[in-house]
Image (cartoon, rainbow, N blue to C red):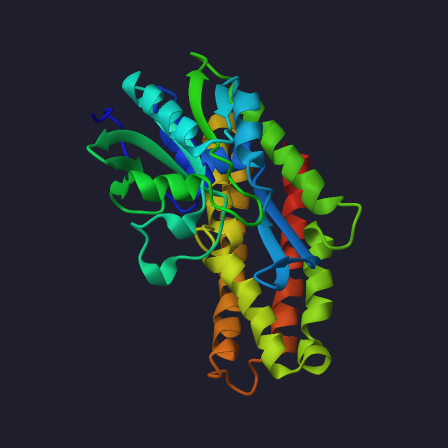
Length: 332
């Protein structure tokens, strides 16, 4: 049994899954547009929250927030279900597949056996679409893979009921209603305004533009306050969250630049095209930050590549994003 479902690879699981699911139901929408309407762009440095025993830095809003905002702003009805019993959860999944409905699932990535072992880590918020079953194997559109994959039933069940922080608890979701003519222009403007408010006017020092400057201040002193070994771990965590955790590179700045380009066409506001280019240039600056950080972590840095230099790049990114977001807020 296999539902005709068009798989598209994406940079990020939540935006990729929603783009693919909505497109299947006739609402063609790119991953970048999902990210932008969902107000996904973000920055936060949370030294009091630990991921793998290291401080958490975030380049997108909390998991699930993008889906919630996109469906609300476009008038899409997405049905969510969660379960206590694994067998009940798998039976519910099978029923939807028999109804020819592709199903989004939240999973623990570590237990998905189609992931190369070196890429597995305990992350319980990974999204994928199940759209068929071949004997004991489920057919899956996992947006971070180039092609569809298959996963044994036992492994998918483990992934749906993975333990640890933010357990998925068998959560699954599927589209129940898509409007014929959603108001994209209104949704785009709402998405942009919320990002501007969050990034420019956060009331706490570790979020948005303030958060970047807060991290820069902490980072330039890490070797002295933490010691070289621990400073390297802290730095590696920031770079990993920026470049590897489904961001499409540069902490989602490239994706947001693509969104602004599409938004210019939808709204007819050509100023957004120029801001799209500026956002991509900011992404390049974030990429400089990651390259130097990687060299430091691998002990291949030159004499001028050090923590103070990285802090300066971070402050530069903060100033550029502040200028851009102020202009963006006035534009929409």
